[in-house]
Image 1 (cartoon, one colour):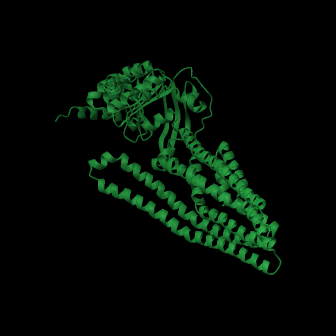
Image 2 (cartoon, rainbow, N blue to C red):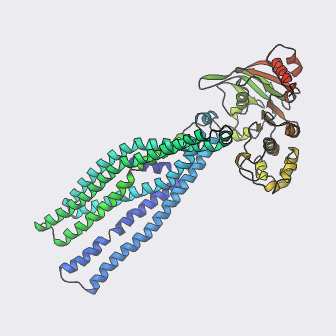
Amino acid sequence: MISVISKFFAFAPEIYRRKFYRSLYLNVIMSIFKAFRIPAIAVLLEGVITSSVTPALILRSSAILYAGFLGETLLKGASTMLQTEAGYGTATEKRIEIAEHMRYMPMGYFNENSLGTITSVTTNTMENLQNVATRVIMMVSEGLFTTLLISIALLIYDWRIGLILALGCLLFFLVNSQMQNVSEGFSQAKSQTDTSLVESVLEYLQGMQEVKSYALVREKSEKLNRAITENIIANTRMEYALVPFMNLQNLITKLTGILMSLASILFYLSGTMDLLSCIVMIISSFLVYASLEAAGNYSGLLRIVNICVDRANEILSVRPMDIDGEEIEPDSFDIEVKDISFSYERKKIIDSVSARIPERSTTAIVGPSGGGKTTLCQLISRFWDVDEGCVMLGGRDVREYSMDSLMKNFSFVFQSVYLFRNTIANNIRFGNPAASMDRVIEAAKKARCHDFITRLPDGYETVIGEGGATLSGGERQRISIARAIMKDAPVIVLDEATANVDPENEKELLEAIEELTHEKTIIMIAHRLKTVQNADQILVIDRGRIVERGKHTELLEREGIYRRFIEMRERAASWNL
């Protein structure tokens, strides 16, 4: 119990940890004010026993009672506010920290960990921490502090009653420890079904078009319903498993209170305790078990807190790429790949590749699917770090650059374009957030998307759907090119940017690419003849190696992969319906 509480406080950022601590301090003082009702009642009872009840005595008893009530109320409000600020603040800061941490993770992490897992951590896990965890931690801590405070007071006041309370607490914590052990297994299952549920919902929503197209609604609905059912079962099993322990804890606290009361009565009857002390002990027994019972009931959820913290730390513990390089501005934008190799999950993807890409030249990369084209581009732009060899930009190893200073030199246009749920203008500004509207329009015109933007209901202020779902593929591509034009990086990487574009959009898209790539160093992965035949050099990659290199005309003269590639494209282009 204490270890989980300590782990949670260590997990919280320093500024919010201090707020949690202040809240705990207030809870301790609040416990003292809560205990004011004991002397208030004792004062009144003493008057009753001695037959000396006077208005002054009643006033004194009421003053003590109301002072305690007022102090408890004020401190409760302040403590709750601190808990709320610290809980939401911790979740917010950790979400930002995870997002920043993921910026510099190797791309392999996102292949090994599904979108559902990452989404579950940043949503469900953080939601649990800001709501459940904060409430659990503070209620358990408050119960423990209150119990400890009253126990010490009782041990000082009458060691016999204090000893009964100490033994009851010991038995309580033994049962609670067993409950924590049982809770651990069920909490893990609950966390896994939470993640599976998020994954199933995302898969169902993102694949809705395919689901309907292939009449798979029933099958996919069954999978989603199964995930929901498993989540319900996991939560229900956890509740059923913990309820017996909670009941046993409550029974122990109540029996402890009863034993304290009976012992006090027996001591009074035997003449070893006066009547006033006996009544005070009886009242104290009720206060003790009320605080301990609340702590016990909430403590069953501590394992969820523990797992939530572990899941967040699991992402934060993934070693990022070494990004603490120098702020370098290269003198040139020549790119040199020197005998690089790279493996993923023990499979060699790039095998001893060397190449030179001169500044302001165009290099086309072609080859069979799965041959390593995209991986090579990712290694050049340091989405991954090479296992052997090095990649040079402007004569310096890319690992010598800080990540941000390196990325300033690259712009990317991918086959699959992601646009944010925001205005078109802000999506274009993504390449330069401080850009004026005039620059946005200028970039849009160069990317050949100004005309269709002005035809939209709100023009550049039109809010597009997440992922750009409200636009056609060609329109999304041109907006991504406008974004790259806005960034104006010296090196452009085109990853099959025209692969899925319809003929109507192809002409405008090629014009947009020409505007983007003017006077730049170009690296393109392409399948279409017209996008590679004018390249300064063509690299043919197969099974992680460069098997051919040269210009279009040179490669056509050889009997190799490139020539077969071109012949297949020409035959396909000649087909008629």
